Image 1 (cartoon, rainbow, N blue to C red):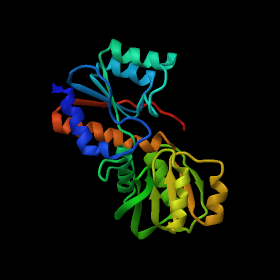
Image 2 (tube, rainbow, N blue to C red):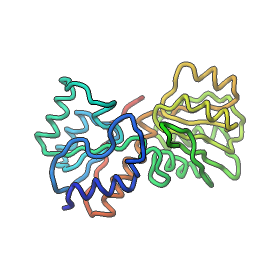
Image 3 (tube, rainbow, N blue to C red):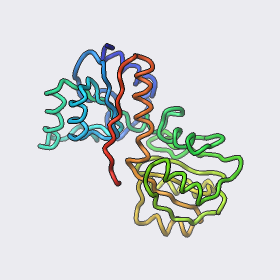
Length: 252
């Protein structure tokens, strides 16, 4: 068993969470068991995730999208009450890391996507609240656009939405997981060949077509499974705790 504060301190330091001006609080959101043996990870906090975590006898639930957004927190709704009750009844702590997990150069969502696509090098890309959270993946030998889109589909296990407006050969690919469709503007400014994110937006099709940059939407959920899984594996490696990733598929 590992003390909960020790795990949280490790995560805070690993992800440099205090340096991010995020859309919600990073770190421990709900206290629970003081000693951790089993960490359950998932993309988003939900009653379904907490029920699965309770079945697995988790002590800490670790997510990318936490329970609280904005500052200060609003009133407790019936949905939030149910979620909190599941955590309280089963003495499970909840921790969440949002932008810090997107941005991490090794175990971040975007760095891992670039690595698994076979990028030869990367550089920071796409500023959000003063921090660059995405990456530009460089391919020394340009990749065929359609083959790259197919590889992204295999990686995320879903068919991506593709607006194939850019060149057939892709040497530089912008990557920002989640809901970052408007970061295509920076991809256009930098002259990238293609840009991949999670969710599309209605306005993006014409923007892609008129700018000559291929746009790929590979799923908000699907593009954000990588970092949280790697974070749980990091805790297992460093502290010897058990780690289980709970897959709750979301088509968005």
